[in-house]
Length: 572
Ligand code: ATP
Ligand code: MG
Image 1 (spheres, rainbow, N blue to C red):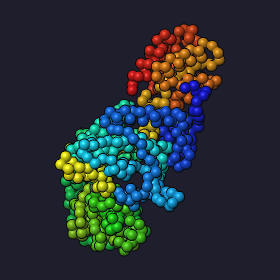
Image 2 (image 1 turned 180 degrees about the vertical axis):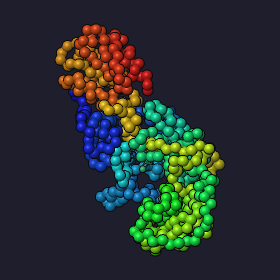
Image 3 (image 1 turned 120 degrees about the vertical axis):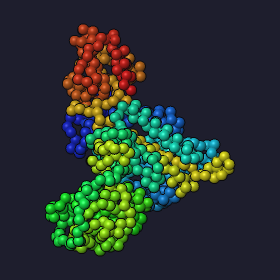
Image 4 (image 1 turned 90 degrees about the horizontal axis):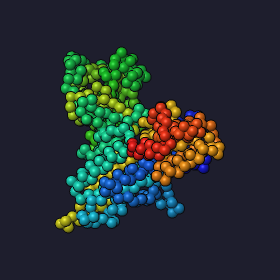
């Protein structure tokens, strides 16, 4: 590609709208432009990187036996009603009506479409197993689209769906995808970690997320400092420490006392007003679980874990109660709610089992209660692990301690079981002519998010440092001058030879100062830069600089192609 004929609008200034480095650099290097919140045009340079990610994903998916197809992005409401998700999916599902007032949505995912397809065309065990995938544009009306294509509303995803005859086959399909994903992220050259993720009502240990490690990641990765246990924050289990500090305290059990706490609502307000620590307080939160109010109680210094609570309650919907729902359920306003004499179900975190003499809301405005003791004063329905893991918590698998890192979720694999095949009647006849529901799995990779994640991992003050696998071009050739002469002639002949050898080359033939060209080369992150100047040519050399190293090496002209080819193919 000739730079002068290309569309590569780079900018010097940091765009004000961008908070994280990948977003800034993707805008500055002319990879993307925003059309609307979370909706981006992929400019030629951005699209080239996207296509490279897609190529690797496609190759590894095909190698693993998955077969590509392409499904529509507009999906009729009926299939979502059949699966039961039309009502459950919430506001992320962008719903539209056609001219006949029929309901449709813009696909955020394709379980319904693929199950509908397979249900109609797969009838016999002989057609199974089957794994179908697509690379396609999704739409999710994210509550907070941000960070450019990292959390867009419109984005490209690879989604695959496996169909199996039995549990054994489904598990095999799952681990095949697990292995394919590891190959994909390895080939992409990303530093990643596989973590256990929540399986919700499906259960089992068949959900993993693939996380690219980066400080700007929105996800918390919890891992053990000794063994290989790793999970996302939603899933991370906590080993019950039998020697909690509360047991060690052996406090004498005191009588309940009501205390006046005017206008003190939050854990911090109450604890500092009473000169106590947040861990001496109990937080009571009211949720609506499948329409029924439920109270969840945890120690004041902990955070509730929504996924764990939802699993314990075994419900389809779990939402934080609105102000009115809190008042209806407790007769009191938030800030002063407590578990004593509460008329609704109470789920308590395990750590409360052994707490003595704690403080909690009195279910009366401006009052709290002190000296509450779980056994004596509360009617707890279930004790369970319903809080987030925290620094210092113990590993559920060994004697290690849990540590925390930030990550970007770039892939997610999940065993669906018969969740969709049952609801949508996707079944087959087995060897004995018996009808069975197909066992499914689903496997997503965020293609556009991967490009952003790679930039979060690879950049410096001058711009992007792409791994070879994702770089839009492998090589950029910069002639010091484009005036007719040796330098531009040599640059063109190099360009032609490398291009003919299948290497993606950008020839910066703009009539600009070398400094400007070097800056743009650094900004766009092209791994290998070749500078061609008259002085060097006179000495029989070209200059080679790789984007991830500072030093410039001189290479002999006659060996240039060979050396460059080595550099380019080496790291992929
Ligand atoms: P997140 O927790 O980040 O919202 P998710 O759990 O909703 O992700 P999945 O439904 O598993 O994501 O989708 C598969 C993959 O698609 C994710 O692993 C991620 O890489 C990508 N993805 C999901 N939402 C977005 C988005 N809004 N923008 C870009 N990529 C996304
Ligand atoms: Mg999401």
